[in-house]
Length: 369
Ligand SMILES: *Cc1c(COP(=O)(O)O)cnc(C)c1O
Image (cartoon, rainbow, N blue to C red; front, side, top):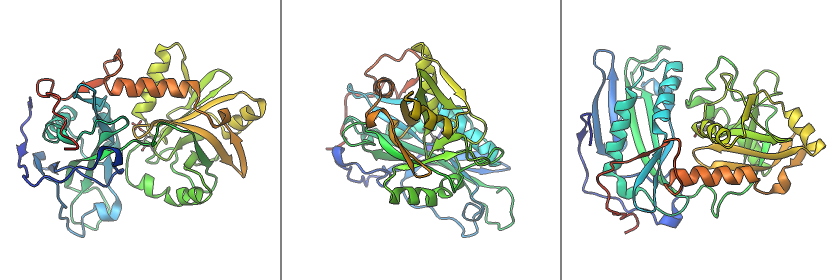
């Protein structure tokens, strides 16, 4: 199936797979991983699939000091008939290159790395769980590896893909969460790295998230870094509002991550004749809509949860409740439709789903055996 060469060294030492209904998030990894290296003279080279194992880096490797790194996150889903399906994976590699561009990392060949991913998935296909809500999380990333303490872009890089089976994001289906609207800290500003999936954007939010969690919130909603007035996004989700019939999501102004779930929801709603307005929306507007009784739904969107309804917002010590803390009609319909398309249960009119290796498969789901 592969059109691009990749060297493969497999291990006979297979790890036990977690039970289908107790898959933790992000701590179990499959038996193999993908790697390739970059040097200015050779470009990206030596693509290889190797047994999953720790890697060795020089303590002076630039990743440890200046954080020059990017990552992606997507999932492989198991359809009822055993096929393995990916959701718009080409968009993830496109975005990886956009993030890399911002971080001065050389681009990868998008088609080639997608092909390498498919090869890796083919080797690891028994790791794709099949229970409702489970999937195989795919984490491609690039690190800067040159041992050099001088500030500046690394000369060398390593690109890797690791795979991790993950359970249902919300045990027992989706349920509305409480979100703290952050006033003290900011995530990103225009001209910064907010639109890139890069490490520093996340660790700089931990303090705010820890404070919010202490007070019973699931996550923080970030406001713009200049005026702390306009809504940006949640920790690793974009956000949508339905106010007085209008569906609104913050416009991509450079500090917000361009979510693939966000993009898909905008396209889906448009196909239902429910266009989304991409514009600035202030937190005051949301609170006014609550006072008016015109706020109908709020939900976060991202690969992890797909749709995460927001039941309560906390801003300046004022709590507002949305839709009686119940899942909204649009939230539920979007969740059912997107997860249905992703798992091959619903028709895919947009051609979003990419199937792994159409020829192999034979319902050989050995996952929990
Ligand atoms: C990954 C991410 C999202 C969601 O993007 P998807 O492509 O939909 O998974 C949103 N915001 C941030 C900050 C993210 O890192």
